[in-house]
Image (cartoon, rainbow, N blue to C red; front, top):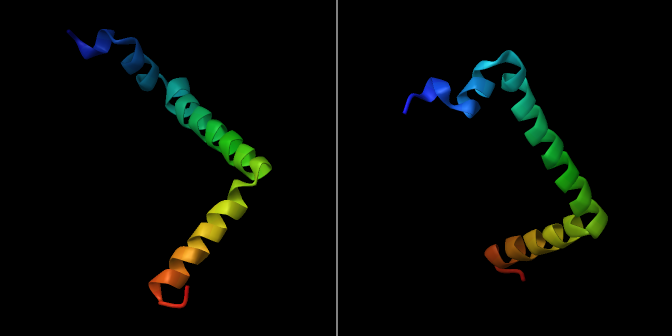
Length: 60
C-alpha cells in the first residue's frame, strides 16, 4: 500500500493540513483546560500536589 494514496498523508502534505491539525489539537486542549477549571479540578490537583510534597519532605 502506497502512503501517498493515504488520505491522512495527503492532509499532512497540504499546507492547510499542516497548520489545521495542530490548531485543532490546541483548541481542544484549551477547551478541556477551561472545563477542568469550571469543575474545580485545579484546586484538587493543587491540594494533592501539596500533600505529596509535604509527605516527601516528611512533614505531612
